[in-house]
Image 1: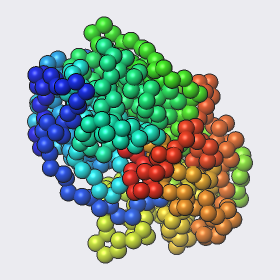
Image 2: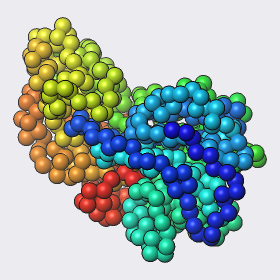
Image 3: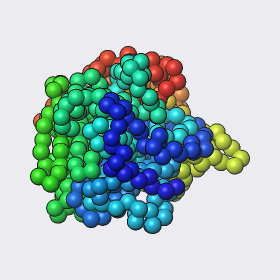
Length: 506
């Protein structure tokens, strides 16, 4: 598909009206993608990236999105500005698929760009929801990429529709744009303050006009968002591994509630009106973020090793080797092994070359999907008592199949140690968790889960051990999935979930 060109003259629209990119340049829905039964892991939703003042801004955003592919695999997109026009290219699939034609970058000129990798929680998706969105309002052209979930978007969307607003997508991001379009504030910071006096929830944003790059993080700091620099160019990214790929310098994180504006005058900071205690998502450390990233001002690898260390202190085991469920449990497994004195071995090999939509031609069940993704190393496992370190257990179905595979490969005993507490509640702030009834720890106690998994022993890290593994200099964390205590009431999000809508609507 061709990138969409948004000419500057399209900015003169009636007051309060917003025209999403999809209405300016209609695109057909992509074919529905029916995924097989998902493996037993919660999933992240989106990656966001911004680049200011670099002659190859689109290519830098592309590389950053590639580094952040783990945060969203359903669609990808880039918008650029040459100071006069905005240029957009989005598509369904992985970054490499969407930008497979090198000539695409010739159609994305300019030294200012933002990008987005999207993950939604439905089995099918449409191109209209692919970001970044580009809109034209009375204030001019604007593009936005969003990571998060709002708890009151449903009521605000209805109010806007009652007032005559027309929505082109099912994304919460469009609510942001309508509210900004209606704001009477004379500058973009004022319009953002007006918008987020009304919208509540978890959000990190990168936005751009023809000449400015803007970053916004919610007052509780749920999702990570970081500032980097490469020479005289400024960078924004969900995780710092994107900066590493670009050989760029990490400057600092965007503070909770902070609004960053970068233009020819440099970087300026302001803050939203709402004040709140920090509630950074602790599950970013447990599973979602890459181990080579720095989030919430802490290295993920270091935090995960502490998770493993504290797990070994709390729940030792009599075993011959420690193995992990690759890849997210590797560093916690290393921490467990080092602190317990038990040798760490590679006992499971993960196939990194299968997509989310792979379906075995003969067997489409979960067992086949697990065997396609993981293979035990018989020479390591045979006749040995093993500690299997896993970062989390959601439904437990995948782990049950893994345990059977380990035993079939010759493991004498299997002792499972989980480097996080039992997950008892869904996430309503932008992570894809199953419903409460589907969470195994909500329905069974630890002994019952042990029996279900068919393991010799099962132990979880305590809440106290989890919190001791992460830094607290900058404030607290959201632990709602482990405790059921939500920093913001999620009533509207519960409604969306119960009525079959996405939990993550960014």
